[in-house]
Image 1 (cartoon, rainbow, N blue to C red):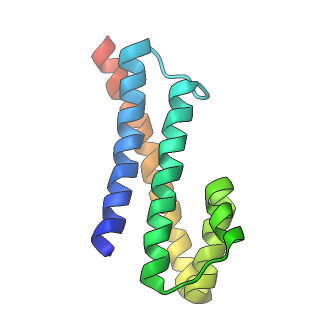
Image 2: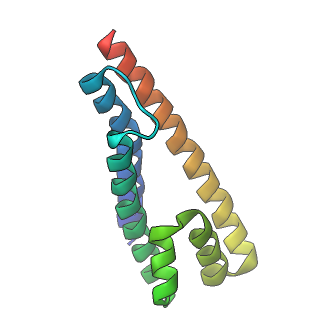
Length: 122
């Protein structure tokens, strides 16, 4: 199960890096709220939900429909709640910190992808 969760994180990294590269190569620029960003966001939501589903199974946590919908609709709020509820306060806080690190890494990959795209298009 751990390998599947790592695969989901790797897919998120690829989406974050490749999205801006593809957009830059095809359009010559990267729009913050453009069509490509929307597609990137939708792919990321699906991947995050897949990771969450695998993590629930790993933790033996039975989430209700509201938690599941929250992860899709408001991941920034729902995942910290999930981490605390599934792991307790201490391990949950550590998981939240790891989540913040993952988000920061994805943001850096996005910036790197934009730089690579600009370099490829001249």
